[in-house]
Length: 190
Picture (cartoon, rainbow, N blue to C red):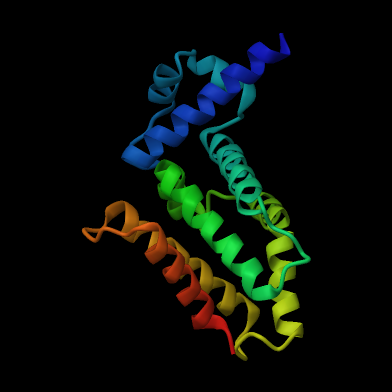
């Protein structure tokens, strides 16, 4: 029974991700989500109290997968520079493989639909990344800028690199992507 519940819940989340990435929040009614998920609207409301609750659950779902992928092959034993390259390249690879998730995160990362609790949970998942920034700052490797600015510069440039790959007219090969990730490090290092 629990597996059946998880499958319906997962189907609702996947349908929401696909439709919102295609049409946006306002253009995606619950009836369409139910139809795409092949479940009833009432079934969705069993798992999610509202469309906003569904969006918050989807945000956590996507953020969880992104965090797990971002931290793969990451080791605190590496030097800071090498660690940054691994993390940033993992983000690039994840979003290249999951463009719908990129589009969703771009729409909702700073949306008022995402509750403070959901936002905090998303930040908690990236605690190791934040620790790496702190470590780099402690080792005097980063520019003298506020931590939020440094992380925004790095993440924003990483997302721009992904978009260039996905939507740009420029062909990027693996060595060029790696060089782009290294250039992001150069932008924030001292």
